[in-house]
Image (cartoon, rainbow, N blue to C red; front, side, top):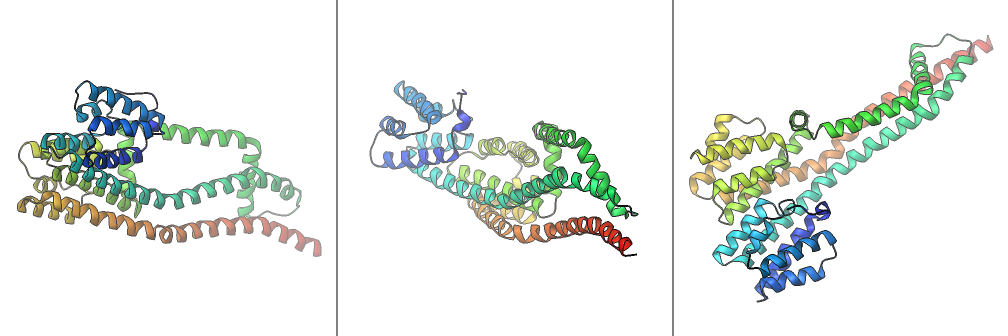
Length: 354
């Protein structure tokens, strides 16, 4: 069931729903009254529609987990499964508290990832704006100046003039082409086959590929670990983890592991047999230890914390990796620009003296 405006439901809305519902159930408030209180307090119109639907379902005798299943775009398989296990075991309040704790960790993790990507995004956007401004407004004006100088122009200046003339005569079309190309690219990478190839390419990029890999492994280990810890069968947990994975490369990995688990093959054995490129050996060994000791959920949650720390370290080192590259690019650009502009002017003043 999909309601208009579901995209407006934030991750934090789900987090607070689980947290507040857990507190109220522990206080002895009935589940219907608890959801009703949340409905009255919510300021998010899209989420209020969902809560109203849940209230109607509860009034008609439907379980909370069954009601939440109607909104898969908001409440994923992991969320619903943990609540369903809580209802069956009679520990709904405890399961909601545990779910809220894990969602809180996921929320903090998402903020770290976004914060790490803000710096390079701002730098790239600033470079595009400055470069575009120089190309459109500055370089075309230099064309008339250099053409008026009766001197032999160096190669760098000729290249600059060619670019300036091109921008002067076809600048609007070039900008339109670039904007259109960006839009087409953005739409194209949503097509599954193209998206898969793009994500494979990104995972091969030095440093950034390792960053994305650590993010995906953290999500995989945490989601699977949380579900196993909550008592969800491993086959069902693997299916839910596959559905919750957005990166198509890792989605393919987890899907193959899920099929192997259904046939009785261990996760460690399947990863080793397939030799997945972006699943490190330390992860495989730790999962194997967990499977053999009967503590797979603990091993997975340990791995999620381990790789989250890796993401933290890389996020802190990201500026030191990007800055030297940007400085080299900017230095080369400024040097070329200065050489192209100063050389003909210097030659012209030299010819006047003679």
